[in-house]
Image (cartoon, rainbow, N blue to C red; front, top):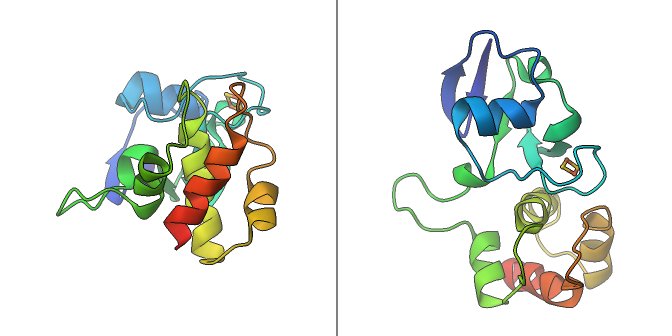
Amino acid sequence: MDFTLNGQDSSVTDGERLSLLDLLRDRIGLNGPKYGCGLGQCGACTVLVDGAPARACVMRAARVKGRSVTTLEGLADPVTGDLHPVQQGFIDGQGAQCGYCLNGMIMTAVALLDRNPDPSDDQIRQALRDNLCRCGTHQDIVASVRQAAA
Ligand code: FES
């Protein structure tokens, strides 16, 4: 199966029947996307498929054949290594406690800012409403996305 992964041509054999999350983590070794609920409900496993957030735990890997997948590892500038503005926003905004949800928060926020570079706080909350944070860090997460958008 051929697809684009973090901007590079990628080819895997016998991976189509895996979940996309298992393919990325266990076969390819990208551990940015996290296993949380495994049911498509928490958002910890979020990746971008053709630029849109997708729950990798409930998506068959075969569905990304010929498509473009971006993981947390693909956000930084490949030449300079500079972090993506959303990653930097979460550092500057201290938008983490335990950090487990951050992959999903960041990937979803990247998709939001690609669609809407200057969202309101309500629009940020709406975009992240299905990404769960058990620490209750939502205020700092919204502030971090706001910082990235500034
Ligand atoms: Fe995929 Fe929770 S691990 S949504």
